[in-house]
Amino acid sequence: MSQIISPFEDLKSYFQELAGLHRQVAGSFVHGDVRRFKERTRSSLTYPCLWLETPGQALRDNGAGSVTVEQVGAFCILWNSPDSSPDEQDQIWAQTNRIALEFVARIRHDARQRAQNLIAAEAFSLDPLDTLFVDNDFGWRVEFSLKKPIDLCHSSEPWNNA
Image (tube, rainbow, N blue to C red; front, top):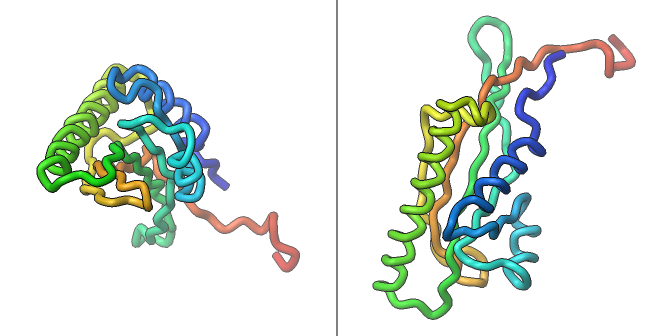
């Protein structure tokens, strides 16, 4: 049975390093699920911040009798702005969009330089976020695919009735 090619720890380390290198994000980084992010918003986060979501998996039949597992990840660039006016929100979206695109450009650069081999650098999807949670976080969510989908093959090893 195939092993996952891009483990979460490698992805987390890569994004944590990028967050530390970016001048505006300046190391403000959190990873994991919504609960973990919400815990940090009430205490130690500075903004703008980078939130790396736990990757998901999409199972697809390849039409040749096999199933592949495409690993999908996302990160968010967020800015906290309680009581902001619509004009201020527009400015926040513009700033966080610029930062998100700077991260996408860096990921693509690193892929070309072979400094990262985790993220498929050919396609990204960006979606705006507004009033996320109770903290009035605004920004952008960037979705990407991880490289090298894994094959999902049946193995009799974990089953008693194989």
